[in-house]
Image (cartoon, rainbow, N blue to C red):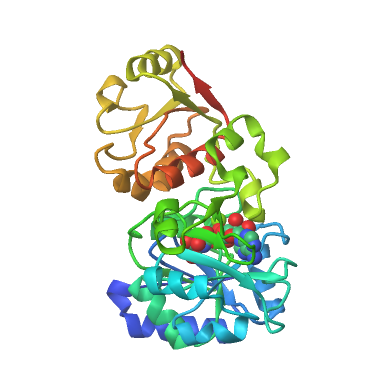
Amino acid sequence: METRILSVEKDGLEAVCAACREVFLAGGLAAFPTETVYGLGADGLHGENSAKIYAAKGRPSDNPLILHIGERAQLKPLVTEIPESAEKLMDAFWPGPLTIIFKKSAIVPETTSGGLPTIAVRMPSHPAANAILKTCGIPIAAPSANLSGRPSTTRASHVIEDLTGRVDLIIDGGDVPIGVESTIIDLTQEIPVMLRPGYITLEQLREVLGEVVEDPAIRRESIIGHTNEVLHPKAPGMKYRHYAPKAPLTIFSGSEEKVREKILSLLDENTGVLTVDEHKDAYPEEHRVSVGSLKEPESIAHNLFDALRRFDEMQVTAILSEDLTDADIGDAIMNRLLKAAGGSFVTLE
Ligand code: TXA
Ligand code: MG
């Protein structure tokens, strides 16, 4: 398949929106930027169209897709009810990086919902995504625009690398602002459950709703040492090894000094080190990738997937990572890093 590439900056938003509309209405695939990560979109209301996403990504078909909308009025036909809790969350966080799970209506095909009776919906705030969705007028099913299992895409170059020849259109909208996927909350249970940590934190959700629980499978302790497989996360996609660079990744935790000593002792010519600005000088330049500054956890979120992809370019055979931050968006950062490591985490006493 030939893949057309358009740029928001060079070709203009109007041309980009028109091209996406044409592709989506013809049942094709287009990748576009959102504020979290790039998305790989298709018409979400016709199963034969959204099914193409699974093939292009190499994604298991039991892993449901998120429907993206440009206006709140598009939500009602997709769901059987809109609980009051959802109204509160939408008022507080939409458009923005929050995905809400509802009971789905009959018009949402099971291919899109991965066979589940529920559907995930999100209204992105990225100006290009929002304009594209408004122009198309149909809900667009869109997972992250990466090959299944690989790190999500936060730069147009990542999307071009993974999806050229597999999709009809790629929209280059520059680097995305946030860099980790949306927070997911399930409102179909008696008590709201956070299924995936993201830019919107558990505390922020609790400020709006009161009681919110966390799916136990997404906690740090659950991912470490693969116990996740036993816990069965409620978001099907959270159960796979994910976000992963090609080389195996191990995370080291402990005092700054112990971590540095351990990583230096394991370093050889084929090893990469994932570190932060504050610690990077301890490691040789050819081996290290600094993901951002501990003083700005948002910089770490912004660069994380790019850093993981850099190790593929360096062709290292092993990656040694420092335990990154737990502050603010740190919950989401460590969730992704632990998944990329397949739970390989060493605590240094
Ligand atoms: O930020 C984002 O959410 C990005 C951008 C493109 O919007 N999208 C994204 O989609 O991350 P994806 O497909 O990579 O991740 C969606 C996650 C998966 O873990 C999936 O299993 C879960 O959401 N999910 C989707 N529908 C669900 C449902 N009905 N019940 C439980 N989990 C669901
Ligand atoms: Mg994904």
